[in-house]
Amino acid sequence: MIYKNQILELFEQHGELSVKEITNKVDASRQMVHHAIKQLLEEGKVEKFGRPPKTIYKLKTTHLKKPDKVTISETDAKFLKNHFLLITEIGEMKAGLEGFSYWCSQRNLPVLKTMDEYIFTRKKYLKYFSSKEVIDGTDKLLNTEGFEKIWLQNVYYLDFYAIERFGKTRLGVLLHYAKQGQNKFLMKIIVDEIKERVHSFIDNYGIDAVGFVLPTIRREVQIMKFLREQLQISLPTISLHKTSGLIPVPQKSLSKINERIRNAENTFAVTEQRRFNHVLLLDDAMGSGATMNQIAKKINNKQVANKVTGLAIVGSFKGFDVITDV
Image (cartoon, rainbow, N blue to C red):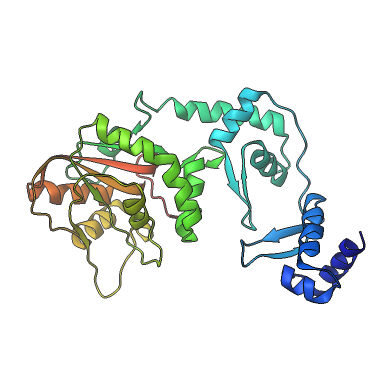
């Protein structure tokens, strides 16, 4: 108790502190400090930021209303666990009922009533999944004005990026923060969730080669490179290259379909010399479909494959919908 009070006083004086800093300021061992911090975390008096070895602690703020404690059925709890994920403004990952309660508290919404509305809405979108656990986005692509021709045989998503009212899906949240934060921890979660589904897709659709769509934004940690390494697809990978002018222009910065088509047409190159029957193009997110379609055109023109199918981790629900935040 003495140590906890001393530590709380230190937080009031200094704001943020690491365990090392606390140990240097109190007459206690590092082990005792860890024990006291653990108790303060459990009591909700302090909060933790970062991951070892760069972890700091501070007094917990109370600017948000504490989420209501509710009791729900095992079925509803499982549904929320499988579908709802939230990452808070301070980087905490909250899944299932905990995350949904937090989301409701931010908006002053009743948890149980809003949960019923969420489950109803989410199930409406789940109806778009085929028996092979993918969403067929081909009709959306065919009905998008601006394309002279659709070169993809078909295009599929593993989930929608977002749904009405409730925003990003679980995969949408993971992808957004994995890319924006170049976060390998979140990328690993994505791989764990999609790896089996991607391999099943390859088997079900008779794929004999894959191509990984290259990124349009330079990042130190590229999610497509991570996927290529971690999905461990034992098929030939076709050779794709990304070129650009003096100033690289990201696809997501272009709001018009014709601009996106021209960008993809002039910045992606297919240098593959081998011949295949059915190539799968893998991408993290598909909005307009311009990038995948133009790469498919180049594959077709070079007679690299008889068929090209696209598969994205997430895709947009509406017609021409640009996903700008990934």
